[in-house]
Length: 134
Image (cartoon, rainbow, N blue to C red; front, side, top):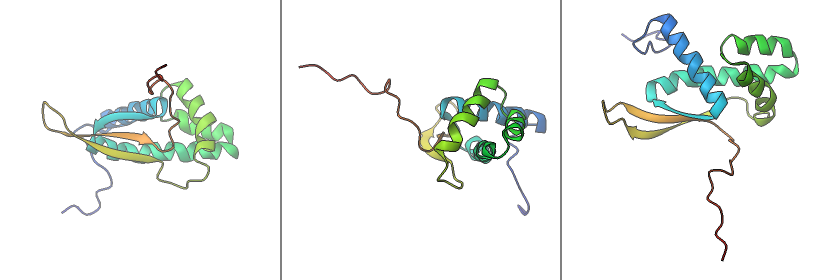
């Protein structure tokens, strides 16, 4: 029976699973979107939403928020970005900060693939093609 299953093991030991999720949430905060398999994205969503909640706490206790963020995120610059940008970006949202979009199946093993991204991403000007002059 599947009663009381609180998380996916992802076929890894607990230390490997923790390292995987820490690296993935660091990449997600750094790039705002990453491509991964669907089960990994569903587990990552929990940690990624918790990091935004921690960042929103920085208004009341900055030191505690930075400590809690450094416990999960592995790079200092990424923690700085999390604390600086995310509270204002998600001030009107009380949860559900991420979106998972299915993209098909991986070629080698037919694993279901998707990308996970933070909502309200700033649009980059580099991705839009330059306007042609007449």
